Length: 351
Image 1 (cartoon, rainbow, N blue to C red):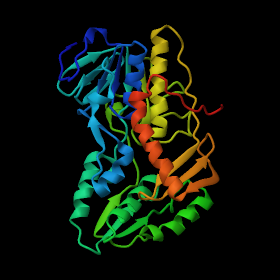
Image 2 (image 1 turned 90 degrees about the horizontal axis):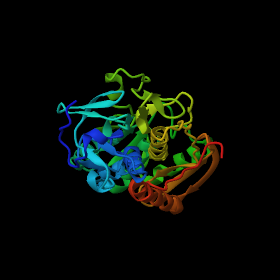
Image 3 (image 1 turned 120 degrees about the vertical axis):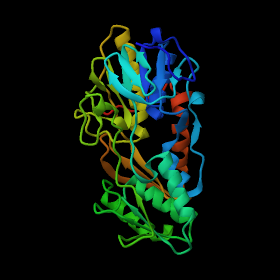
Image 4 (image 1 turned 180 degrees about the vertical axis):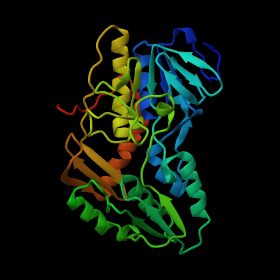
């Protein structure tokens, strides 16, 4: 295999033990945690930028800065290739420029993609479209899950001259408790958002996410959304692992897309790769939720408490306390993959 590719952080390609594909929350966590354990790790990402995706709704509404140089998020020991991975196989990764990297372990952490503000490019395009709308223009957000609620309320607060509506055939805040759905429905008009599926001058798609096609193009098992199928250890095949939005595990059906799962999955995959390299058995992933947090503009928020399997308990924190806690969580999330990688811990589903 060729060992010469475009990379901003060279590392001896003959000594790589693990290749991480994807420079998001989980990928950076896995790379840094492995490096902290003395492993020789290389990260592949299709660009030099880390995107703080949980603030993309702010980016779209106000231009909030959501990017950092990926190089600054990684430990110095981590190699970096700013190329797109085009194929994965046991023991190797092929890059778009023809480079082929070798390692005994490969981790797919390519995240998710979608229309509208689900990506940096989509958020920037929405920002441009919003700025071109005249006063009184109608903006309809399609999809009333966590992302849809956040983008609708953020736009309404930042652009009060626009008419913002929210719609979803599944109803408002699907999956939330009945009490919290009713509370949120009562809050929307106060936040400048109406429930309406009528015509709009600008429609914003927040109807769902899917995984990039790297796993399917590589001939690996995927589900209907393109996510790599992994077992309880987060392994798809010997030496091939997956984490975050890019994977699904039939044995762990309570897991949902989001940084709340990507970070602990990244840490667990790193620990398992370290175990296997040391001649030990891989451990099952054990994780439990405790809450869902939704920003409703900058001065209001909803913290919905759930059990370990992500079922709402009916309890909530709201208003400025909810907004404060959501902001604190967002700040912790951006720091966790770098500052807390070595000692990161999470709640187990059973414990």
